[in-house]
Image 1 (cartoon, one colour):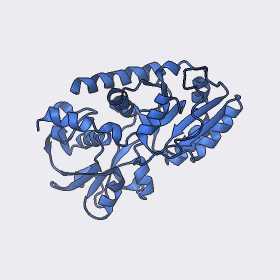
Image 2 (tube, helix red, strand yellow):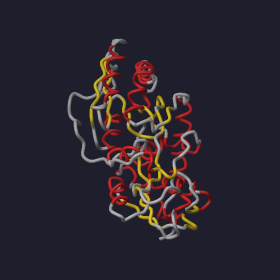
Image 3 (spheres, helix red, strand yellow):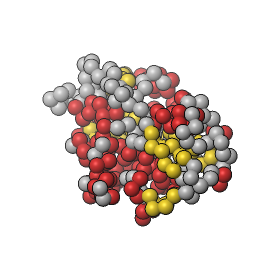
Image 4 (spheres, helix red, strand yellow):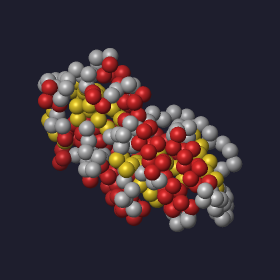
Length: 310
């Protein structure tokens, strides 16, 4: 199979795989029932006193703070936990949810292109790291030729992991690589690549299957990997990480709803950002300087590139 066909085959699978980030392992839809979002199914007026938000974990402390903040503005926030990424987007598309927060722009671009979505970002939150960990080596320079490095096998994080390994000097990608790169784009490498499910990246590191591993922030926390084991970390201010900025997402026809301004303002309050920072042990970079227009421009570019590669 040639490189172009390989890319297309892998890209078509992104919409049913997990990503972002926050890049978690997604399973089945939980909490997908209920009365639906505050927009009526027939396109009627929205309930301006309530927001139904979908998230992959609605039990986290910052949601309670956010609810209290919005209550002061006369808005009831209902947070539904849905652990399936596609359902989180489809729920907004179908009107069961008003808004979601779980994904970065590249994942959103795939949903829109491959699922016919009309979703748009309305406010940036943060970008989360995808770092290289090792229990055997103290630096990238210590990694010997032929060492095995595990990395997430879902296409979104695979491309990002490959870009990280290129920045670390462990491999080179065709034309410098991009957010859609695959293993087929590797032109030279001093290491062996071991793609595994994102849930297994820590396991591969601990059981000796790999001498180093690219692990997302959530899995590193769950697996007990401390920052002292990081041997290469992304510069979260790098503009090349724009595709991985997380954002609140709504249906395009609802993007001008005045509730979103209050939602985003409340999320960016010191109290909420402190809780989010503590949850992620400081491993994030808030992107409040990105406007909705900035996010949409980045999203449109990703969608155009994805369509061109199909």
